[in-house]
Image (tube, rainbow, N blue to C red; front, side, top):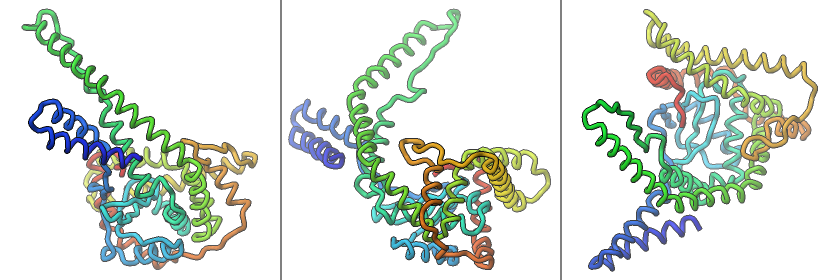
Amino acid sequence: MVHLVTAGLFIGGVLLIVLGFRTVIQPVLGLVLLGLALPLRPRPGRLDAELPTLRHADAPILFDLLDRMADEAGVRRFDAIQLSPGFSVTATHYGLRRKRCLVLGLPLWSAHPAQQPIAAVAHALGHLAVHDLRNDAFVGTALKSLNTAARTMRARNNAYVTASVSALTWNAGKVEGGAARFNARTRMGEWVLWLPRAAATVTARLLLWLTLPVTRRAEFEADDVAARTASTEAAIAALQDRQLAGAVGIEVHRLAIETRTLKGNRSATATHEELWDKAARYAESLREQQDRDETSEPEGIGTVVGAAGFPSESLRMARLAHAPRHSATITLDEPDRSRIEDELRLPKQELARKVMRDCVPLTH
């Protein structure tokens, strides 16, 4: 329905402009319809230009591992890998042909034991295997279009002008009057766009509500794919480590500022490599602290529902713990991990330079 409405707005706008070109009102209405269709247009995904991108020729050992995992999950293989400073793993689509890209967080890859990164990647592959509707070519694109349209038609914080001018300033009254007229036009435009913005927001929320049951089920099924691929223990450990994402992100930010400020006479290559090593050690210390805290607390499944209605990590871990145990079907031995680290050495340095340049963790 969302895509049909978008197509109808576009075709109607073009017809009004072309067929009613001799009039005035019809081309104006056509431009209005085109203006509403433009924010709702389907947007094919894109690779993040700020993140290092790897192809098969750049990292054959890593791609071989991912290919075996994709074959095990029964899904199409990845076409590209992007490295990010986040503590997460995400499978995305890009281009009109919806090629697949794995966004691999370096802190997660470096800090995890060998099987936990495989569990995290297998979980991302599981969402593709179980056909999660929110990642679908139609529903996912519609959600993205609606969210983008609602943001586009919403006034930003800097949309209004505040003119604090002294009464003794030359032409102070004209400055204040101009600011008032500018704010009045901005407010009028916001009122005009209120109805389409509200329609896009309500439709997006309705679509999220309608897809929530199947998305919850896809989350559980993706956990099962991770357990069958990397073992039940690795899948549970990977879920437990999701709670470290916020703290590790803050630490990467702090390390970027510290390294940029206090690196002294050390070589740039050494500081870039130390950034991810320190982040990995910090994540390992958090994991050890988390294990100590859990041993002193009574067992339980905790909160059933997490953010946005999704099942919480504690419920998902309890579900895997009480399900039949699975052993690993895909493993990563130490020689292959060392070869993968060699393949990632230069991309890791490139990403470290970008993070220290901006002093903030990049997001995809």
